[in-house]
Amino acid sequence: MNKSPPLSRGEVGSIEVLVNIRNKKGVFNKAIFIKSNATNDIEIIRVKGFIK
Image 1 (cartoon, rainbow, N blue to C red):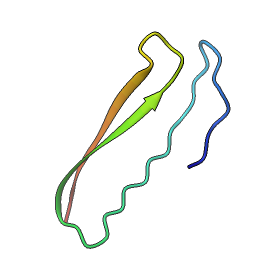
Image 2: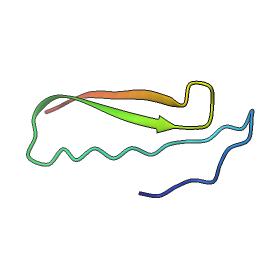
Image 3: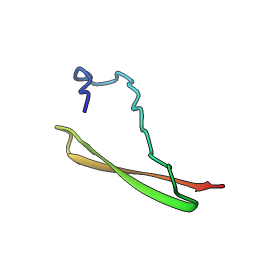
């Protein structure tokens, strides 16, 4: 797991998410948990898709 340097208030960053779809078909729904020192210290982002 690679950690990015901390962001200051107002800064913008990006997150790269890799989903292993080998030998899978159909719908997927993955949760990404982002921990920070903000008031809401854990944010959850969901990645959804369909694999043909």
